[in-house]
Image (cartoon, rainbow, N blue to C red):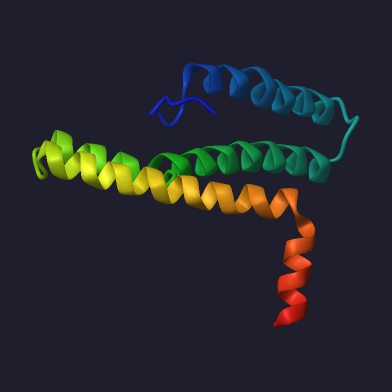
Length: 124
């Protein structure tokens, strides 16, 4: 997924036209030539349009609800906006880095020594 904020990109429009419209047109010609039934034509059209609508809806949710910001990103924004001074920024950044390193260290230790988890579970 790109960082493009546009809901519908040029690439998406091209894909919709090339795949979606062509599929519907081919199904329409097959229906007109009596190769497929009206139900099949309507079904193909509905699935095609529904698929692209779902794809656009998925992109809309990603753009408008996105991923939550990390604590470091929030701290950087507060510093850039002038809400906190440099000393406060550095102190809070050090705390965040230490907490991330300790949680990463705990996870790595648990992965490298699975018997520790079993011993903890047995003692509880």
